[in-house]
Length: 369
Image 1 (cartoon, rainbow, N blue to C red):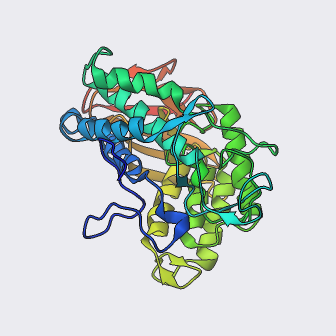
Image 2: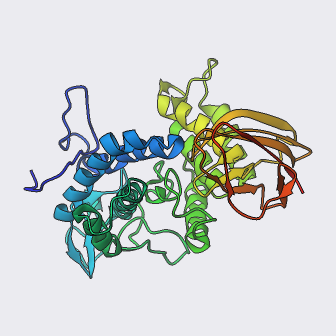
C-alpha cells in the first residue's frame, strides 16, 4: 500500500487480521498509527517487569519494524518529518477560507499532533530498549532512531494556551469531542506530565478543561479517559469528579461501563480501574505514592499495586496525609521515590536523598520524615 518496509496497522485490526484502512467511517479510517499504539503495550510490560528476554526476543524487533515504516512513510514539511494523510481519531476540523473545501468539516490532514507523539514514543522506546540490551549507538537501528527523533515536530501550543490537535489552530466543529487524542503524551504517555515538562503539562490541562467544560466525557470510556488525564495532571479532586460523573450516568447495576447509559463497552471499565490506580500510584517518573489523592477519600489503603521497575507497593494514609508504605523490589532496580507533593520521607528510617539501590526480594519501609 505504501511501498515501505516495516510494519503498519491502521485503526482496525479484526479477527481476520485485516490491518488496512476501513471505508465506513472517514474520521477513523486513514490512521496508520495502530502498530505504534500496540507496541507501547509491549514496552510497558517490559518496564513493569524488567523482563529483558521478552524485550530482546519480542519487543525490540517489533520496535524496529514499526519505526522503519515511519522513516519511509513520513515526508518533509516545514523542516519536520510528518505523517499524512492521517487524522486525529475520530475528530474533525473546519476547513479555513484559504483552503479548498472551505467551511466544510473534514477529518484528514497532515502533521497530526497525536501521530507526532506516537512516533516520538516509538523512537524513544527503541533507544531505551537498545540501551537496556547493551546495543551500541553505532548500531544501524539505534543510529537511525537517533537521527529521526529530532526530526519529529515538537508539541504546539495554541492561542488559548492549549495543546494543539492539528498542524494549525483550526476552528473546532465539536469543542466537546469525546476523544482526547492530542493528549496521548499525557496519558498513557508521559511527556506532558508535570514532573517531565511543566509548560506542556499546563497546556495539556487547558485542553482537558476546555473539553470537559464544553461537555466532553459524553460516553463512559471518555469520562474515564478524563479521569486518567486529571490524575496524571496531579489534580485528584478533578479526577474524583470524573469518578462521580461516571457512576451517575454510565455504570450499570453490575458496574459495567456503558455508552450513553446503554451499550456496554469494556473500555470504560479498564479506564476506570486505571484512573483509580493513577490517583494512588504512578511510576512513569519514579514511584510516586498518592500523587493525586482526592480530598473525598481522607483515609484509606492500597495493597499489591505494581510499579515500573519491578516493584510492588502497599500504602496507607489518614486524614488526607501519607502514613506509611512498603515497597518490595522484585528485580533489584534503583528505587526513585516521591510521596504526595514531594514531602520529606524516610526509607528504613534513613532520610531519602535520592535513588536507592535495592536488593531483589527485599522490602523497604517508607514513612514521613
